[in-house]
Image (spheres, rainbow, N blue to C red):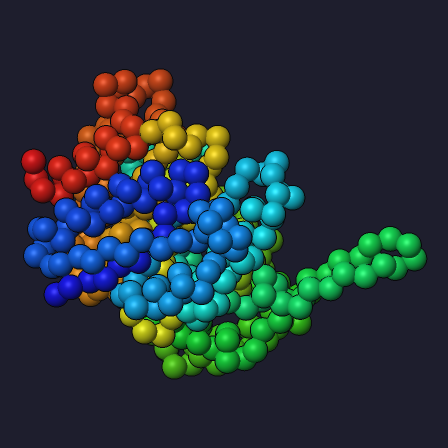
Length: 363
């Protein structure tokens, strides 16, 4: 077997943590005896500096030849939002990649580790056994809807529309119910059907899809209540199905359950095996170049790639087990380190990646 993987390093801490993901991917390829062809692709700030655009056509052309993409976070410092290099990077590069490859299914996994319960603001009895899959529609809704600007009575008025077609909702709902069949058999649709017309359509279409999955418990929750319930009783959730913007917000909220946003990966998938795998967090300019960023999210993104694009589930489990074992042994990066932890087990970005490789190899 030969896997052709496109590498999009990203901005600021992106190259640092992506390098550790690649390190782990190479270790797994040696252990499971498959060949890797790594293709480095230019996008975001790196591409803008060189070409004056965030997502050049040649990048898309080369990415199209790959089996999957491993991506680092994009974006610049918040204070440079009006700098042309960063002002439209999310719209041009992030949304551009998603739309071009029809990556309508986004999966974000939120799992708690017992050894990190002390980092969460929640009490331990609420955290035990939390294992949530957030299935988010990714290429429609308010982020891709019509945007208008006009002057009304002498002042600016901006608007963003949230539009969904039945077919767009149906296909993501089918994905969510399919995933639930392999989990705890429960899907919770999160929307705002008491206010939003689009959410009424979501409820109607999801209820229709649910009829084909009689073994799956089909629930509904308003998004404001869901935000509260994620904190009050997160264990009630198995698969969360939701729209683009709601999924973006709720998945970041859910990340605090595990103790750090640096721990969680995501997969963005189309109808085939091709997928884009990346951390759920941003580029963290303030800590770039200091060898302190947590690479777990990139490393676990590799595990998702092995599972969903390369059909190497056992290899994916090896990586997930290695991460859990390392944390259980007390090793920490600075974002999950406390004064009660062993200072001798505080690791930098590179050292953490090395330690995961050792766990995978049993050395």
